[in-house]
Length: 239
Ligand code: BJW
Ligand code: ZN
Image (cartoon, rainbow, N blue to C red; front, side, top):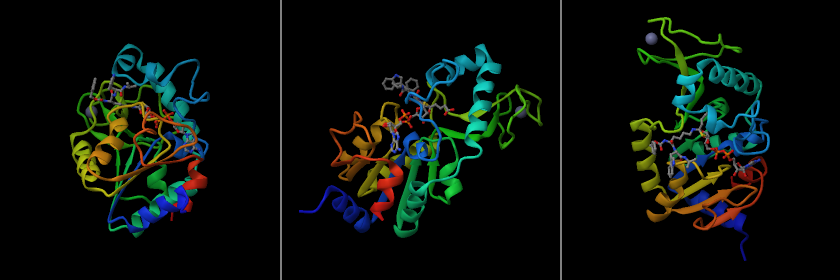
């Protein structure tokens, strides 16, 4: 009898349309802390307390200090074999889309091109007044950075709790999920919406859905197969 790993590998190999959804777990193997792991705290603040528009309005300096700490932590990190395997899926499958919740930029650094960074990117800033979005790789970034066009306060170009995802990303991900025949869900706790609902969307549209995670998630009950293990060990075996 074929192993679960063998079944998922077969499905991936024969997929006409493949979608991969990733979360912090895929970057954990590059040394980036996850959000809800024991190492996900900064000065006793939880991500949920800092990643909100209210927190930024209340204390922009504190929120920027958190992002500075994260920028310093992420800057030296490199993609790992799981990121590289995802690039290879994109090369091999004619219709491919990567949906990542990660803001660390490691998928792009690995070479992924067909992707939606649905929660934004830590290496981009957005003007709170004129809305211009620009890349910014300063480490550290000047605390309370200002827009070079209108001098207003810049914020991280990241989707915080209570904020909507970009309409373009929502449409693009919806189309990919509705039309894929295989969805791989890698390294996400599956508690943050709308991404937490993506496995159900693909499943209801008839896709084969597999998750790769060392721990069970709220979606484990609805996926076809759960492969238990670390992304860097399991994902390359699916090629
Ligand atoms: C490994 C591994 C290894 C470890 N290999 N795996 C009630 C119901 C439905 C929705 C809501 C609700 N109440 C509020 C909402 C809305 C809210 C939400 O979902 N809240 C929930 C917490 C309940 N969602 C939103 O606000 C979103 N917007 C929205 O819905 O707009 C419409 C709306 C507005 C208002 C009200 C209602 C609707 C926006 C969400 C934006 C999230 N942004 C963040 C923060 C960004 C900050 C930053 O990065 O700078 O994005 S939250 C944080 O969580 C981050 C992540 O992308 C996201 C997901 O986390 P992820 O990736 O899953 O990480 P972890 O740490 O949770 O899990 C890691 C996993 O890896 C674990 O499973 C490990 O086991 C595994 N793992 N090692 C493989 N080696
Ligand atoms: Zn501006």
